[in-house]
Image (cartoon, rainbow, N blue to C red; front, top):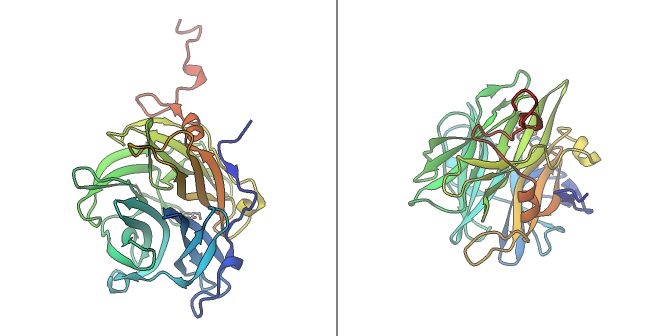
Length: 342
Ligand code: BMA
């Protein structure tokens, strides 16, 4: 059986050893993980999250002509305007990249004095990045922008952090849809996808930005199983959302389609983590849909330590999703007629 996602034999494709020294901030970094990804002309680009030995995170661009072998630049991304924000910013992390027209939007999490927030910067050349703004609402993470505007408004998926873990950060079990006129003030349009208690995806968050296909918006998301003693297990799954109303979930994977199995996913700064955050899909038809045969390069953080790659096709990811009923659940085998209800 061919797995839905096939790991690259080059994994991990980027580690701390690939990062040139950028003194004084980044020398011999602890880890490189959770990258945003996009195509820039013929180049495959990643915006890496790199963590120093001081455990501060930075963004650095890496480029490749084949999507597997990346050269990491020797300069830290400076987001113009970020240092003027007065909210006590400690870290920016987990960038997701969306292209709309000729602008790339980098949406990222911001760890502040109070709560986690979502910020956006734009670039047209991956040299200069300008801050658009940082939202000032409630605790939220895993913001990803849709690659189109609706009636002029931006749409994003995000994950409100309504749960405080006893020995860890805030988290959440619901992905919601939000809209904005300016990328800074966001209005919630309601829930999209819910975590499934006691299953692989109890806590959830969107991965890379949704991909437009003829079957709907294809979403890859991370799910966390929290019911194992001493370990949270981060995995990946997929879902299909209605093109017109992305709050309608049409299908989702019953099980995870990628889970920590390799040593580099099982062991590291945070063990048992695969965290999908970027993808590059080779091909788009004339109407702007990703065709089923298009090759998918999915980039993910492994154990919060390195960057890995797994490949698939749009069609294989879609096939892995099973239709859901009006409650958003996949009907189980036991809901088929039994002697009791015939
Ligand atoms: C999440 C985020 C990710 C991280 C993951 C596993 O809450 O903080 O950046 O990769 O936890 O530690």
